[in-house]
Amino acid sequence: MDLCDVSALTSTYALLSKDFRSELRTRYAVNALIMFVVTAVSVIVFALRSEQPDSGVLAGMFWVVVFFTAMSGLSRAFVSEEERGTVLTLQLVATPSVVYFGKLLFNTVLTVSMVLAVTALYMVVFSGFVIRSPDIFFLTVLLGSLGLASASTIIAAIIAKANTRGTLYPVLSFPVLIVLLMTVMSATGKALDGEPFASAGADFMVLLSYIMVMTGGSYLLFDFIWKD
Amino acid sequence: MTPFTVRGTNLGKTFNRKVIFREVSFELGRTSSLAITGRNGSGKSTLVKIIAGLLSPSAGSVAIEDGGQILDESRQREHLGLVSPYLQLYDEFTALENIEILSRIRGIKTLERDHVQSLLTTFSLWDRRNDALRVYSSGMKQRLKYVFALVHRPTVLILDEPTSNLDSEGVESVKHVVRDQKSRGIMIIATNEAQEAKWCDEALHLG
Image 1 (cartoon, rainbow over the protein chains, first blue to last red):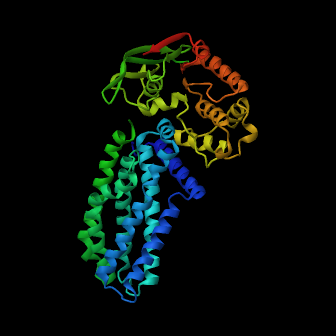
Image 2 (image 1 turned 180 degrees about the horizontal axis):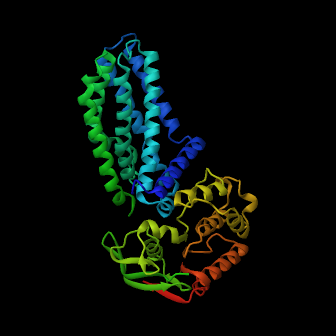
């Protein structure tokens, strides 16, 4: 897709809009995400009882919940099209790049919303989850969500046609996301510890590089995944 | 109207080492019509998908030319309309919403309301335009697929099992569509029915 192609941008926006309207009516992905977030955080609270973990553990647990919540819901951008038989319809009306960027934007908004929801929940249930460096934290959330969405979207497109997609999605996602997860956990720990913004500079460079490589590579490969 | 050609050259398709068909060639210009016939499993729907750009051939190529210029995939979509049993629309949206949303994704900036109304009326769906597709019968969904395929006035209309799930009134509407399409564009029909194959001037038999 030529990024200056207004028609392609309009089509991408139309596809994004379609997915949001569909999600509002079916709540296909949102219900799964909400349920998983609430359940996962509840289990952690019960497991810890009254203990309050330190910032490093909290940062790790935060992104563990985010990762598994993403695995429960982000594949639906493509799986829902496959299950409803609308893949061919989309192939007929939209170019692969329009489909890719439309789904990527949808997953990005879903991921950012999900991460912010987990943040709010963590701040309520864990007294130790205090964001002392909000600039580091919110940039980490933004870049982490973008990275998570870009990796999850392409993997969702790959597994959508598989029979065992429920198992395959997290299995394929984990090795791809491990670098991202380690980086965001490190940056989040610094945010909770109140470290200066510059201390997370290397983490942000890694995240930006990850996003560029993942999005660029996915865009180039998506044609081959999408069309038989 | 500019000259418009759909050309298939030595098309072949293989699935898991099984040859579905090979060395299929055709050339169609405006006012041409082609019936693709063959027994079950001969590859009619597969060939239709290849022509529509939904499937890559194992051999050969399909070229769509407008005014002598070969169209790339993104431009081809503007000129193709497809009706088939395996094409699904969105059950959570109404008929009108499906047409509007899919037209916007296709890149149609302004939908001609009169044209949409005319199509929905032709296929007896105007009164049900604001009903969600989940309450539609299979025949009504098939009719809506025609509206979806025709709303952007395609130069090439491809029908796979054109009268599947349709009552006699629906079949008459399809015949009207075929006549209209043959007069100004290219018509391709994939069918098992001899009556439907007769709607076209040329025939291609697979298998």
